[in-house]
Length: 243
Figure 1 (spheres, rainbow, N blue to C red):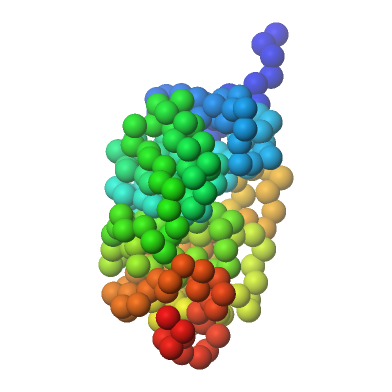
Figure 2 (cartoon, rainbow, N blue to C red):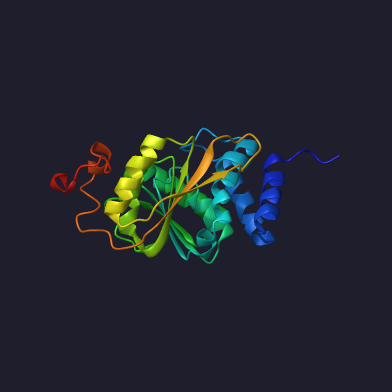
């Protein structure tokens, strides 16, 4: 009787769920194996089942949004160990994915992981979101990066008009969402659409927040590095004097 393979079984289930071909499944498996076998990684989730669920399945939940599948350029902000960016690169080989992280060691780790998985369409860049000048892009992704108003300020200047931000969040916070709605209006983004997801059986309170860039982002955004976190937008007062 063959041994149970949580990673392989998880990837096979994801391939069926998201209609991915065998090549994409192979890339996802190599990505998971490379993370599992790495000597050091900026994540504590290293077991095969955890990789399949909390890294791969959670990342690929965004494939349920048509704009994610249609994107040809993606910037993944604060990518850390490479998720969701590298998983999306594995699933979408025609899409150019840039994984950004301010920590050089994390960027180097992601570059090694992409190489091990054979992801020619992915690159890792050591840069702060406020300072990167690689846009405009079709899609910005952010998972567990910062509060929603901060993520919006990072993302809006990088998006083309009509582009989309997808932010992975946990339990919903009405106060934070109201603040983010005010920030979105100042940044040229539309109202949020929020989708509850269940990427794996044990997942609870998983949500994707989707924002479309409706118009240009005003000059002066993003503010200088550190300012978005220090004084997040959306408190109801003008932030322009603080830039």
